[in-house]
Image (cartoon, rainbow, N blue to C red; front, side, top):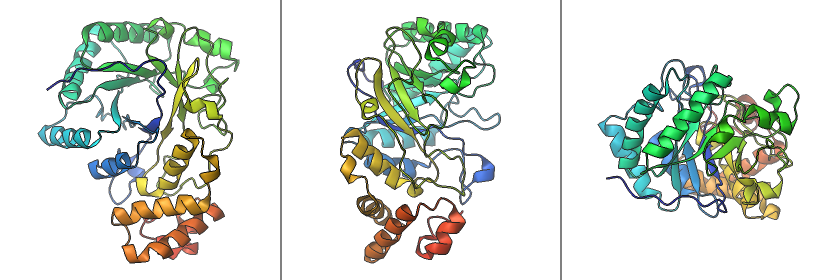
Length: 347
């Protein structure tokens, strides 16, 4: 049954996790690729709350497999319904990838069918994603995107479009590299309703810093920072270092900035320390971002989800603390120095 929705107020920040990576078959982990399993996703959602309140599903599709736009089968409906029922403290947001638009009506009908299914399991919010979509940044396509968005807003009322990832989601994609020209590049899309937020990565696609000034010059538009720091899109690398130079104000709704989402990596058990650190940043507990506390949080997750036995907790925490301090970021180096962690870092 579709549920009534409450619009997200402009003064409410959107901080969360985004399953928005490329997970190709060539980077499969124990045969898994494309996106997390239901259990992996449920486990991550159980860690959320405390200001980390939005989980966005929009992994990049590979090849011709347009799985974000494809209707679920009966088993998938059951699984997503169960995930939603358990996520009482977190809003699940579904990301659709419309790709190239031939005409608005065709895309509209396809998306409406998918949105009906999403609403039927209790999903209240969605975003549209054109990041890295071939041809999506042309004026002709952006006009069609604008018209599609307007049609969706007018015709679909039981699930809310809260944001888009435009084709020009980074300042680095603009030849002149100025916020004014970035805004001009997005002027067509800025004609969509003002309550729809734009997701941007800031000055670079994989940024070493994110400042509140790293946004397009657009009037009356709110932005969410899409943080790519740990999204390595590789099964042999992992990011141990904390993201540097994150302006604390990106996590709080103020004027044009209204939150940040952390793009994840795979498999999720390798990045729990980064989720811990994000929660500390959101809550201004920067003193808690250290190897000891992060390793404890990480070890508790691994034990709770049966990666390691409870009796090995102390050894596990010690190894994880050493790993964070050593800043090792390839599987081979990690396993050589910490063979106890082999189970986690073997593909």
